[in-house]
View 1 (cartoon, rainbow, N blue to C red):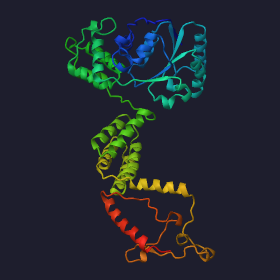
View 2 (cartoon, one colour; view 1 turned 180 degrees about the vertical axis):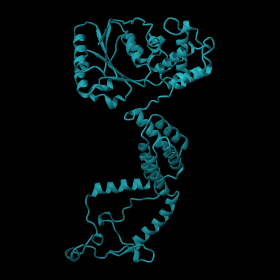
View 3 (cartoon, helix red, strand yellow; view 1 turned 45 degrees about the horizontal axis):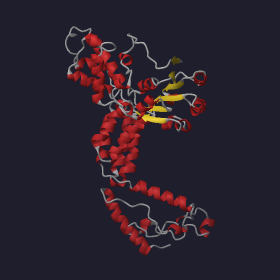
View 4 (cartoon, one colour; view 1 turned 180 degrees about the horizontal axis):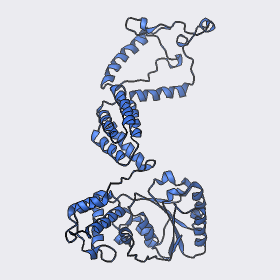
Length: 442
């Protein structure tokens, strides 16, 4: 546990990573998040007035959550206790609360990665936040509505941070290059424009990653014979290695990307669907998970407008299962583009929903006698199966008998669309339903 005095100022460690050395020391130094730290913003006004409520800082890696926590601790008559939810437990939380009780200063309890606190740990924290013994500052990359208990969350303001825009990242990098005391200003490092763009591209909105990549690229370049020349983009690519995508396979970003994939397919946008497919594959998603989603989509969103879609999706699932990666990605791309371009209909899916609603509404209605199975003499004597007519005996293989329970009469569940193969089904079904109304027997 680290205890920091009023208006904390940390000593500059020349051996600390560049991202840590360049951490902003004031609101004026902070780049990005203008909605939170700009002049007149709510957060900045809270600090200046000394009125700081408990807050949850929610945002992607490298967006400035920890920096904001330090800036909040810079308010008058304030001290901070910093814990990491990865290492802290109930014991550490209680110790922090006891320390807060013994000091006249306001105590900010900063808990990094607060989403990793279990329910019991959060329950221990709740009464002390409620009583004002500590002011909670939580930082999380996960959606707090999923990971923070509702009672604790209701006592906090949730402040949302966004990934840094390209322009903000460029400012962060250029500031680190110019800064002599904490940055790389004394090295004489220069970047060609393409190298700056490469760092921004690889950073993917993460200021910490951008500064780490700048530091690694500078270390390579300044040891090379060309160190007097501007740093080229090839050095950035060498330092970056393989790009790591923001994508947690069981967390919010996973569901965001999967949702975007399905909605792009539904919108008949193969380009967007391929992009999100590439995002999932690049982040290490299970290819069979993607193939299963395509199977569901083929029935739910394409349906009978293109019956071949389900066959193709099934074949794609089998092919991916047999091929694995990397070859299976080609099959996924084929299925993705076909389904995105297919004529869409959710009529079957919607029809099932209406049928299920009818079951919920009416319960277990009696099956009409002519449809019942009659395997015994007694059941036949009771009229089971009486009046049943075999459809294949009719010239057109259609029998107009009514088959729904009497209470549902002529209820219609399936309403085919007028696109693709389903248009022919719709035409045929209109004729059958008309005949059933006019000729229906039994």
